[in-house]
Amino acid sequence: MRNAFQPPADRKVFTLPLEIRPEHIDDNGHVNNVVYVGWLQDVGTAHWNSLFPADERARWSWVALRHEIDYRRPLMPGDAARAVTWVGEPKGPRFDRFVLIEGPNGIAAQGRTEWCLVDARTMRPVRIPDVMLEPFAQAAE
Image (cartoon, rainbow, N blue to C red; front, side):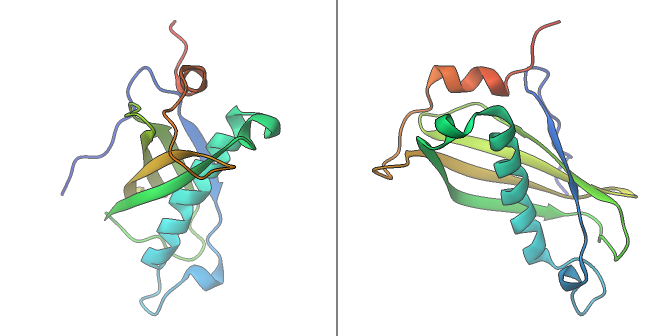
């Protein structure tokens, strides 16, 4: 199994509590794998919304190009869970976003999503502007 993702020291980490609802539970009695994909998107959106004002966010949109998830242990009904996320290095219009889904017994899953920044009006890819990078960076101590 792949080693657990670790955020680099120069990246801000964002945390979002997750609610496990009855409809998330599959026939095996634990959170269905499809729910994790939604959580990857939810935490990425919440992180983006927390860093940029609405007028700035309106100029841009993010398109998911790829989701990759490693499942480690199941989340069960009643478990407390949270998603922890940060972004990787920008590559032109693309960012990898890393997510740890943590439950009461440690990491339940980890995921990486490749996101592409697009102009909200034209829906064409746009290189990630330098001014957009600073909010994702951890301030030096």
